[in-house]
Image (cartoon, rainbow, N blue to C red; front, top):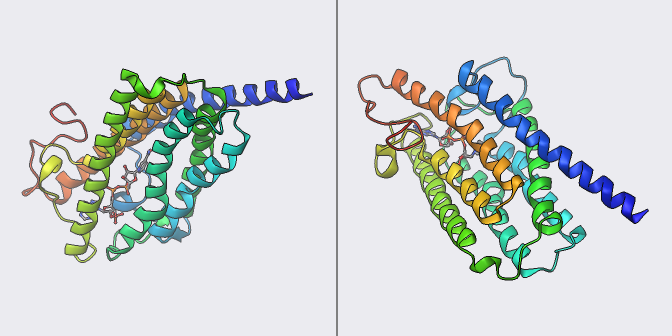
Length: 266
Ligand SMILES: NC(=O)c1ccc[n+]([C@@H]2O[C@H](COP(=O)([O-])OP(=O)(O)OC[C@H]3O[C@@H](n4cnc5c(N)ncnc54)[C@H](OP(=O)(O)O)[C@@H]3O)[C@@H](O)[C@H]2O)c1
C-alpha cells in the first residue's frame, strides 16, 4: 500500500512537472505573438469582470507559495535535512516578501485611475499557477530531490545563490522605485530614471528572471528550470508590452536607447 502511494505520488509529480514545461510555450506564444497582456496595471482594460484591490490580489494569489510550501514540508523525507531547509529558505524568502511585504508597499501609492484593481479572473489564474509551482518546488526540495551534505559548498550552489541574491536585490529595488514614482505622480505614471532603468524599461522583471535563473542553478533541478523558463515566458512579453506602452505614452520623453528587459540585447 505504502509502495502504491509512493508510486502515485511520483507519477503525480511527474505529470505536474510536464505540465509546467508545457505551460511555457502556451504562455509565451500568445503573449508575444498576439500581444496579449494580462489586464492589470498599465494594461488594464474593461470587460474582465469583478476587480480586487491590488494589494489584496497580490496577497491572495501569491499566498500558496508560503502556506502550501509550509504545509508540505512535514510530509517530505528531507524535512529535517539542513541542505533542503537552506535551499527552501531562498524560495520562502522571496515569497514571504512577495506575499506579505509587497502588498503593504503598493498600498502606500494612491490608486491610479487607469488601474483600479486586478480582475478576479487574473488573480485566480495566478493563484492556481502558484499552487502548482509551490507544490513542484517544495516537493522537489523536501522530498524527491537528493542533495549531498556538501551541496552548499559546490560552485553550482554558490553561483546560483549569487545570481538569486543580485536578482532579488534588483527586483525589490526596482519595484520600490516604481511605487515611489507612482506616489510622486499622485497615482499616475512617470518615466522611471536612474540605475538599471537607464538600460531597460522593466528592471524589476530583469531581477525576477535572474532570481529564478539563480534558483534553477542552485537547485540544479528540472523543477527549477521549468520555473525559470515559465517566468521568462511570462515576463519577457510583458516587458515588451510595458516598453511599447512607455513609447506611446511618453513619445518625446522616453529614451529610445532603452531595451525592454535584457540590457543591451532586448
Ligand atoms: N514570476 C512571475 O511570473 C511574475 C509575474 C508577474 C509579476 N511578477 C513580479 O511581481 C511584481 C509586480 O509585477 P507588476 O507586473 O505589477 O509590475 P509593474 O507593472 O512594473 O508594476 C509595479 C508597481 O509599480 C507601479 N508602476 C509601474 N510603472 C510605473 C511608472 N512608470 N510610474 C508609476 N508607477 C509605476 C505599478 O502601478 P500599476 O499597478 O498601477 O501599474 C505597480 O504598483 C514584480 O516584481 C514582478 O517581477 C512576477
